[in-house]
Length: 217
Image 1 (cartoon, helix red, strand yellow):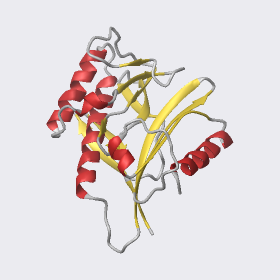
Image 2 (image 1 turned 60 degrees about the vertical axis):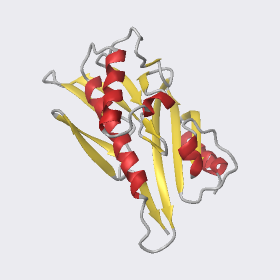
Image 3 (image 1 turned 135 degrees about the vertical axis):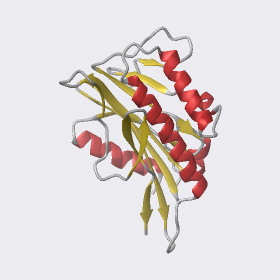
Image 4 (image 1 turned 180 degrees about the vertical axis):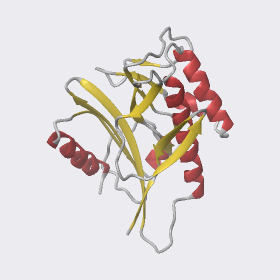
């Protein structure tokens, strides 16, 4: 299957649910490693694929990324280096999500937390190769975190962070709000029921992030 074919089938599924695909990115194999914002091409998938969507319904936009790895020989597994990179990307994502629930945090402070998380996992500097995301609503990003941006986090607001390391990325859209007890909550509103997850505990909160889905044929 080509990247074009994947994009067309994914778009069809979205339209059938009343969701407008405003961004549709697909990469196969080495293109996942080399391109962080990959427009679909005629390239066929051999092993690895990354699917990225920004879907709009009633004006609001939700963003998400998923990765799959395909094997066709018995006992074949996902390469350990890719798993290590993905674990690190999901950790950075969890750090961003956990700290977004604290209203009044400056965008630059959030970005610094991501930079430190990359370095902690041994991937210092990977944040430089693609923006890390930010506030979401009627645009896929109303603002993108950078060191000098004069914006702060707030409750009753959606955010979509998208940390990436060469070959992988972690992205979902979250809603930050206070529950009935007044405790700040992070709810992932673009989760995929049944998709395997990896959990990261950041302070007093545990956040589940999607693993790479292993498809064996």
